[in-house]
Length: 200
Image (cartoon, rainbow, N blue to C red; front, side, top):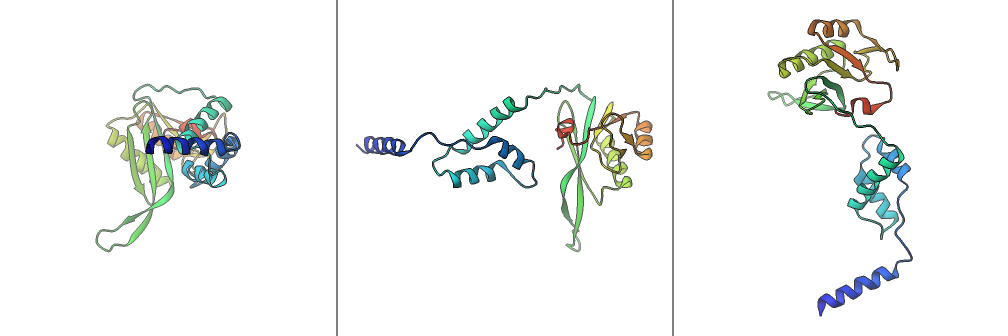
């Protein structure tokens, strides 16, 4: 009897709605997700606050992914094993604590991932300066036990002197390091995060 009543009450609730649930403005959602510290959960909570009878979180994410596929189709990249490593510094600084004094030191987080396997390397370093940039690459190659054919980097000042779309200029020291290790550096195109999506 209880099941029948709950079934009827949920049917009545559905009938009271004045039509289908309004769908979110997907272009607004996509634009907001590009901002720092904005997540899908946060945008879904905003949507539900404005539409209490709106759709659930799973529907929100699934439908957004389907909309992205229709709105801006992309080509899938395939990577050969050992061919490329994608490198970049991760967003905000992190705090590393001195075990003796307990003092916090702000550090930048260097992240590298192999193209085919997503095998990842991360290292904290004091800054994004050229000596630190070269040092983390040296440590990366030691960690990997070898050197990939290509290093795909962001347009970081320590790496790229002229962030041109077709012919980017590499920092001389960075280019010499690549030559020493027998690899080539490919700079990602400016404002094209999908060129290095593995580490972004």
